[in-house]
Image (cartoon, rainbow, N blue to C red):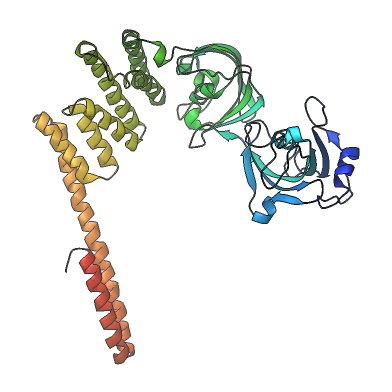
Length: 453
């Protein structure tokens, strides 16, 4: 209900007014949360489960005493809707709001702080009154780079999620620029969606979905069909996509702890072949998923006898080397160095690990470290011409770096001299003081560079 009456949470009659004029917005209509709209929202859209919402609020006891307010802190409060991060009344109430809306919520104890209350602020079994303004909201980012954003239309059931290798049955509807290009029921193995034209972003999101969930996925090109696009679906290069995905059912793959070493090794060989298939096709993110599965299975196997340890070490070394190569192709050089370090722990004379780490460090402008790696490659294999070439590249880069530094320092000292010359022309006395201060400053700078003591 919308009211023109200026109701504030300071009014002693506010609770009675909300009770008599408000609307019960609880799913089971138990009067747990009663709502009165003070100001309508602006665009009609409401936040979905998992959305990050930003609000201002003031909370009062029914006697009018304020116990909390974001306005006093001059800082909006944010939380992920429907995730149990706040009291139940807020998950229920904010889900009913539109952007820009201001409303009052009268909350029963079971939708607030219940029988325990909140020490020193809210007594047990207290009903509360909130004034809330919904400032903005946005979807849940499933990746650190914001490339996959999820908004949940229908919450799933249970507490189980598909894992990599699980077989999922889903309904997909993909759109680009508002036009639907794909609508189908499809089953695929998580981590291998590319085989049936399911984009990487949808594949990755499977691990965060519950059975029965229906969500919207907003995919940046990196997680869609990339710079190549998908001619089969008439999608051009670098397209941003939106998918509506419903997870009907899934069958989880075995977890690491459910397999013995023999089973892990057999499965690792199959997964390695799949990763190599993706690598040769230029599907480096998909290849990373496969090789990482091998690492997750075998890296924890550290208490094996010699007969078992050797094949585990060999396949693990290959996985780490291949991961490093994938990350080099993806320009994720820090990750490449990490995988090379892991490979070198397994074999300190691994020519490929040393060389690939040198490549990654060179591309990170760590020229001295890169040159050390290429020199170690030559210690392992003196006939490695590529390593010799890379050493020359490193030496040239180091020289160029030193030359740039010399020019920068020379320009700095030239500017000091020109400034002091101008001061000298202006006043001999000022020059004397300025020259002394400038000289002291340059000497201190020179000392820091190692040019003096």
